[in-house]
Amino acid sequence: MIKGVKEGYKYKLQIASLHFPMNVRFDKEKNVVEIKNFLGETKERLAKIFPGVEVKIEKEFITLEGIDKEKVGQSAANIETASKVRNKDKRIFQDGIWIIEKNDKNLLE
Image (cartoon, rainbow, N blue to C red; front, side, top):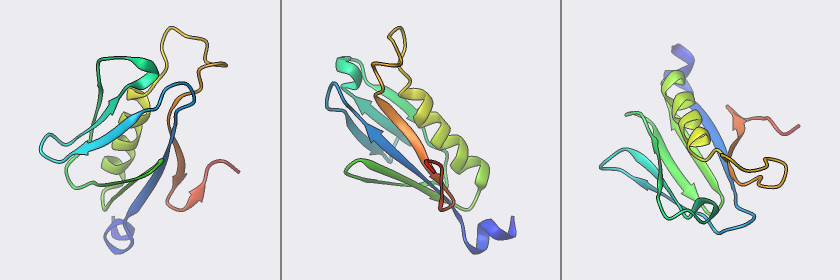
């Protein structure tokens, strides 16, 4: 708890859209991240963001920051789950939003 108040927690996600251009935006009033045109779908996908978590979207990266580790981590997991590919071959359709960094530790190495 002390580390969260002093330094805070930071998760970084990357938007990967190979087949269709994906639109991602944060709605502050509803506290949700809206994912539009995911694999050409007309219905938007929503991911719940917990209160106290700051969301920054810059081109193909989403940054989540906050002092509560559980809220920041669960918000990142909600975004990753909302962009999960269903009923298609996962080897071909590798689109989605993936967690690439947790607290400045790169998960891709």
